[in-house]
Amino acid sequence: MKIFLTALVLLTCSITFLKTQTSTVEDDFEGNGTISSWFGDDCNINTDLNNPFQQGINTSEKVLEYHDTGGQYANVRFELTTNFELTSNNTFTLKVYLASNGLSGSQSNQVSLKLQDGTLNEPWSTQSEITKTVSLDQWQTVTFDFENDPYLNLDGNSPPPTQRSDFNRVVIQLNGENNDDQVLAYLDDFRYDGTVIVDPTYDNLVWSDEFEVNGPINSVNWFHQTQLPQGGNWYNGEVQHYTDRTDNSYVENGVLKIVAKKETFTDQDYTKAYTSARLNSKFAFTYGKVEIRAKMPTGIGTWPAIWMLGKNINEDGAYWENEGFGTTTWPACGEIDIMEHWGDNQNFVQSALHTPSSFGDTFNKGGQNIATVSSDFHTYTMVWTPEEIAFSVNGVVHYTYNPPIKNSDTWPFDADQYLLLNIAIQPSIFPSFSSSAMEVDYIRVYQESLSPVLPVALSHFSAKAEGRKTNLQWKTATETNSDYFQIEKLVDGSRFTSIGQVKSAGNSTSTQSYEMWDNAPATGINYYRLKQVDIDGTSSYSNTLTVSFDSDNSLTLVMWKALGQSIESTHYVANSGSYHLMVVDLTGRVVYVRKLELTEGLNEIAFDTPATGILMMTLSNKNQQLTTKVFKPN
Image (cartoon, rainbow, N blue to C red; front, top):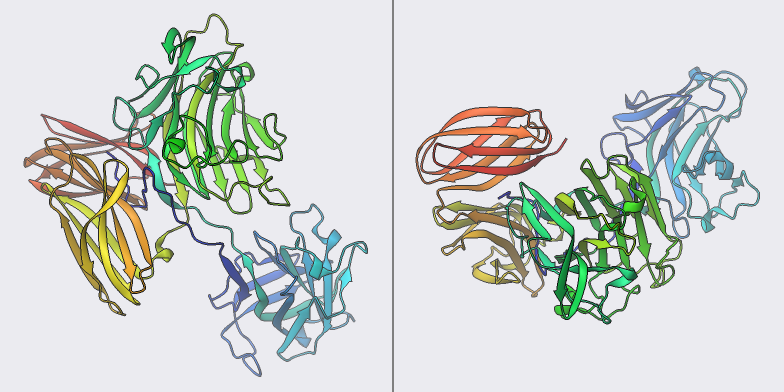
């Protein structure tokens, strides 16, 4: 079983997430800035130049060199991935040194700051500009106040800068444009007096299913939705029964297979000619990235989908309705279709949103053609932020939903959603259809790193099998007003409960180490998380860790991780002796082979391989073998 030491939170848990993050916009050119996209447009720049004039108001070590060698529109600029909000914060400052020995021509000695929309084909067409006079051969601070300074809108129909939110590019220009004069200048300490919203980075794996255990689907992760809607038929005129049989959904050789079949099947007093499966995830979340590697079925009339619904949907028989969360009708709950495919449009996949403002044949949709959609695996990705939802296949984005007005009609996507996988059968199914499967290699959900949520600075948290016990250790770098820690363990497949409590240091600026044992772990996968409680009673949770115990515990993977070129694993073996390690990629190519002498107990194994992506790691001896699917990022 693959063990992720990144955050894995399962079942009925809803993930906490960080509030919208903001960032300053500044650069001192000494490694302390937030601007990484400086660009010289027809202008030579050096962002790491030793300050040639350490004097006056600027004695810093490093500056930006601006060298216009005669470019007609020479400038230096940077661009953000989000926009400035100038309503309340509208001032930019910088230090500038204009060197007289680097000038030619008779242009006015001036510096201009222009705000542009970098998404336009002609970003300058709607710019706003402020120009200030500067003196030669001295450092001076120049301020550009877009509320109070005189400004120039290139497009006279543009509103005042303080009423706009479309600027994401800053252009700095010395001594004007439309000339071939030379300019040598130095810039430093650029600052904006406000902050901008930072696009979240979803790189923390919080939930996944790698489908590694052959047989029925993992009931810890998934629920079979089989109950027919009122009237005895599924929506959209679909003609199938959904079942919980392994005939229609199972795992084989590391792949989930959802199988649509032509067969007579009676359930709930209704007889239908086709069967399939519809899975609900026992996991819901708000904001993040979903990544699915999948292969579509074939057959006119098949309708596979990878999608999401609001956890609050009041749909009879759905998992979260059964759990008591069903309070809202469709489409008010919101629907996110990550991927839909229709057998009568074989090479096309689509993504769509259903909201009260547009649903059913929604106009909020987009797609692309994938020639091998049913013969090869492809990676379907959805990135959901507080501002937009973007869809891609193999890294190619085909649709982004970002309504300018976000309310309950257009944006019910500010609450938990859960995943669904299914193949529906349309009335247009060909009579010759017999069966076809949607195959899923993995599903992964990423969110922002959870570590900033903890009130203490948690520097280490590990869970390892030692014999038939689990050893849990954690360390804190600092603690402020911390009261105690609890280790919680998942029980009954649905809830976490405390298995022990440790008093914390309270307030500390030095490393503190803690340890706890689970003396009775269950056979199979055990899930642990660390709860930290403050003196005032507020609490936070760490990432969730897993430890696996086989039934005979003779050969067990405790953990693995990929670091750069290396893969490291910890295996428990009951018998000392010779073992064989082999790693292959998805094409079957052997990328690493090694003979190992392992001793009874825990064994650390590390090796380097340039191979990336999904790899199959097999450890074996003459009596048994253990194969694990691992993922090594590029």
